[in-house]
Image 1: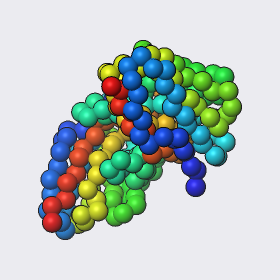
Image 2 (image 1 turned 90 degrees about the vertical axis):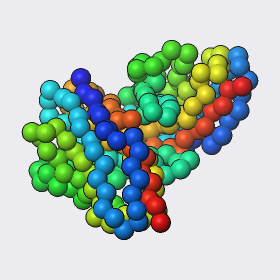
Image 3 (image 1 turned 120 degrees about the horizontal axis):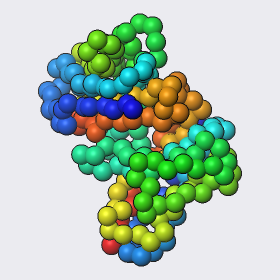
Length: 112
Length: 114
């Protein structure tokens, strides 16, 4: 089975800190995605990548950046964390639309 | 552009009763449709998907869904629910013109009552 691993299940950070959320997949998928999940809002796409060193903005990229230096790793960066970035962050990977996404277990980030 | 509407944010149901979770989509092109389940404090897992062919698709854990093109719906059903089905359920749509992006509904929280 494809595995998508997010390095932290729970994180607590202070306002203004730079935060790195790491995601690694082990099945050579080209496509990787970062979503945030908030009650009543569902999943909202932050950034995605179809190849190494490639990135595209999703629906809510403000306050975030990403890095994809290797095919298996897709990092989400909060340049200066704010309390409104408190959320569940989900990473996903895919080898194509018809296969769907494989999700990681999520990182619940709290910014205080 | 594609969009998904899940009409019910919360669905309580007694154990062993049937359940239907509703999903409607909007798209100007042919779509692929998916249902995912999220158990507490976990990521999403694929339940089932419709790509083409038979409009009734069966998934894991006894769930099934029916694609209705005329009503642009993809409702999820289970004839008899268990306590372990308590979870959040998400409907998602993608199409050839979205790249590999999926568009998710806002989710339906299913609570099975003993």
